[in-house]
Length: 110
Image (tube, rainbow, N blue to C red):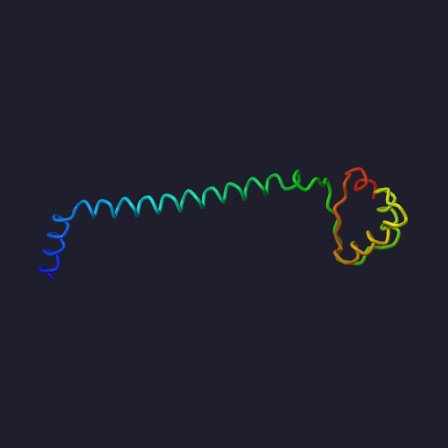
C-alpha cells in the first residue's frame, strides 16, 4: 500500500500542471451544469407565474359531466357565436369537458 501512495505522490509532483488543469476542467463542468439547471428552473417559474397572462384567459370552466344544453346555449350567447359556430363549440366542449372563457363577468352570473 505504501508503494501505491509513494507512486501517486511522485506522479503528482511530476505533473502538477496536468492535475491542476484536470481540477479546473471538473470545476468548470460542474459550474456550467449548475448554471444551466438554474436557468431552466427560472424559466419554468417565470412561465408558470405568467401562464394566465400568456393564455389570455380570465376564467377556466371545467366539469366532469357532460355540459347541459342550457349552459351551452348561455355560453354561445355570451361568446356571441353565430349559428354556424355553435356546433363546433358544442363538440369541443363535449370532447374536452373544459373550456376557457374570456370574461369574468360570465362566470359570476352563472
